[in-house]
Image (tube, rainbow, N blue to C red; front, top):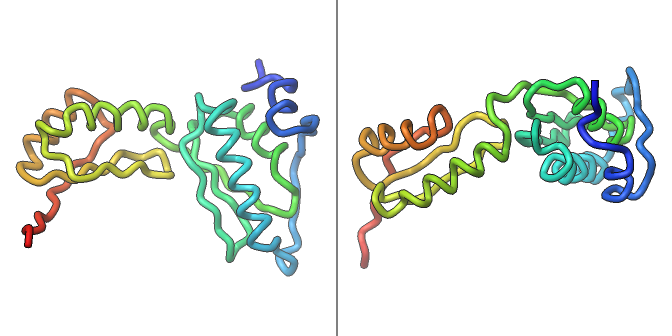
Length: 166
């Protein structure tokens, strides 16, 4: 099965050779510092935004638990590439996501193209690959119908609150 990315690409982005890591155990009494968890999440984000974009949905660091959850479309090669980028002291969990970050970004652009028509107040991009949350000023049901056609299964519409001008 082909690799998600080639080693030369990763080496140029992350300045070092890829060394696959296999099963690992972590002594829970010596969890990594917050900075190591944050750094691991940043490296995974960087990889996901570029080389791993076909599978990546988002990342959620758990500083208290010394771990990072990677949300992605299931792919064994992608998981292996991510494991190779993260220090063994940071525990990794992989969660299946229905959509990639790229799919959701494309849907967000579609929403903003229709923004004036739908009276969009905000659009939130989830880190877990689920659906965009779109807040509109009026007629959320009509906005949902329009967005279901424009971006099927990618958007959830909510009615926002209107703030009166002083």
